[in-house]
Length: 488
Ligand code: HEM
Image (cartoon, protein in one colour):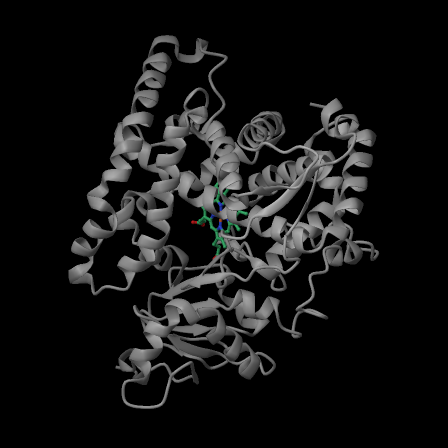
C-alpha cells in the first residue's frame, strides 16, 4: 500500500489557529464569523508565493488555493475532485432539498438550455415585472426618502424570478414570495449549520434548523397544483398545445425523468429559487450600497444607459451587452463585495497530489479564497478602491473588447466560480440585475445618509450585506422623459 493511501495529515501551513492544545477547535468556531479575516491573512502570507494553506472549520480543514496554475488544474472537476460532492455536503442537500438533485441534476440543463437560450424572450418579461415590482414597493417623490434597500431588492427580485419560474398569477402573491424567501433564508444558513454537526446528529439538527420541513411543505401547497394542471393540459393537448407557458414549471415537465413525482418537481423549483433569489438580491443590494457611497458615478451610468437605449431603440440582450460601464460597475461591486468569499469548492474523492506537491488525503476539500484574492495586489492595482469603470477601461484595450464582462469567468474574477461548475444562472442574473439597476439609475438619485459604505458580515463563506442602513432616494427631475420609459 502506498504511503499516500494511508496518510491523513494535510501538510500545509495553517492559518488562524490560536496557540495551545485546543487551537484548531477554537479556530473552527472562530471561522464562522472570522472566515474573511482568516482568508485575508492566508493570502497575505502565502498569496505572493502561490502556496496553499489550510484553515480549520467546524466540519473539516479546508485547503486554500492561491496559485493560478493550480486553479486551472482543479477548475474542471473530475471523479477524483468533485464539486457536487462538496456542494451537497455544504448545502446539506440531503436534509434540506433531496438527494435526487445530485442523482439527476437536470436543473443544470434547464438553466443552460432553456433559461439562457431563451433570454431574448425572457428579457421583456423581466423588464415588465421588475420595474412594476420596484415601483409598487416604494413611494419616492422629489424629497429624499429612506428606503429599506435589501428588503425592496428581495421583493423585486423574488417576484421577477418567480415570474420566470412559476409564472402568473402566483409570482405576484406576496404570501407565496414571503414563503419562498423564508425557505431560502432558512436553507442558506441552515445548510451550513447542519454541515457543522457530525453525521449521526445531522437528521436531528435539520429537524430543528428547518422546522421539520414546514417551510418547504407550505411552498409545495402552492406550486404542486400548478404542476398537476400543466400535466393535465399536456395530456389533453399534446403537441397541439402551441402556446404553452415559457417558465421553469414547463421546462421541468419537459426535462424531468418520466414518472417524476410532483413533490420532486416542486423541490427543483425550490432549489432554483434558493440558488437565484438571495444571490441576486444581495448582489444588487451591494451595488446600490457602492453607488450610494459614490453618487458621483450615477450620472455617467445614466448617460450611457440612455444613449444605448436610443441607439438600439429599446431594451434587448444586445443593448444590455452594450452598456459597458453598467456591466463594469456591477463586476467591480462583485469583485469587492461578492456574495461568496470563496468559490471553486472541490472534494478529493481519492487521495491525490496536486502539481505543486500539495497532498490531499481522500475527503479533503479545496477552495479558492476569492474575496481575499480580489482584494489583493496580486490581482489588481489599488484593490481596495471601488473603481466602477475599471473593467470598461480594460475593455478599451485592443483584443479585450469582449473580455472582463460581468459574466466572464477567469482566475482574476471568481465571483461566479470558474470551470465547468461556474454559475450557470449568471447570464440570466446579469440581465435581470442590469435592467433593475438601469431603471433605478435613470429614475432616481440615491445616497447613503452617512456617506460611509457600511461593512459586510460573514457566515462561513457567505458574505451578507448590511441590511440596517437605509438608502436615501429621490426622483430625478424630469424622469418621465428618460428613454427607459419610451421603450417599455
Ligand atoms: C448574482 C447572482 C448569482 C451569484 C453571485 C451566483 C454565484 C454562484 C456561485 C459562486 C456558484 C458556485 C460556483 C463555484 O464555486 O465554482 C454558483 C453555482 C450555481 N448557481 Fe449561481 N449565482 C447567481 C445567480 C444564479 C441564478 C439566477 C441561478 C439560477 C437561475 C443560479 C444557479 C446556480 C446553480 C444551479 C449552481 C450550481 C452549478 C452546478 O451544480 O454546476 N445562480 N452560483
